[in-house]
Length: 269
Image (cartoon, rainbow, N blue to C red):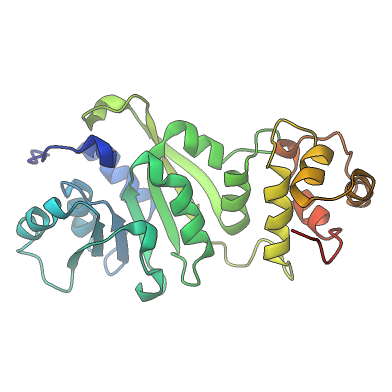
């Protein structure tokens, strides 16, 4: 792929990817087919955009860098206006409710956006059917972590999505090369909620409290995070079938659910 790559802006975390195999792997992971509506975050030089269009997708490109809008419009001017759309916007304040139901997200995103973006697309009332994000390898593996290595981010992602990882993309394939390798992270919307009849707000109140001091025991973390007396907190943990000395990163989602169900109501915040 002999694409013109515009200068990057370090402050925006821009690293262009033009490797054919890596771009194709992202489209494959998202099962991009003709007629799909895809929101691409940070199209940059348009290399991934071109792949998405080649697969027959209708692309809605959201680019923060205003200087890239005109070059993108020029590059894809030959495409039907119903197939390619680009707008200058900050994805952190993007209105997802306007996206077509069943849309997909495919993006090579700046590393600093990863956690925020996962939370936003998880909590929106109009989530994508699938999100395929090329992110820092360490972060992709943290999102897909198993009990023993869980974090607040992995609990959030796995509560809302079927999480998996795909191909790794070496740093040398980017222009300029970042300091670390990347990996494709796949978030697929499940056909039914993770848990039925779960108070999501209460669930995450407990989870956030549990990870407020990750290196501490669950008892100490929850007591501090929920502002509860330790004896009451210990009783809550034992009632959920857990040991007070367990670490937050060791819990499964089911155990977090059991714990949240024991939360006295109301709890002062």
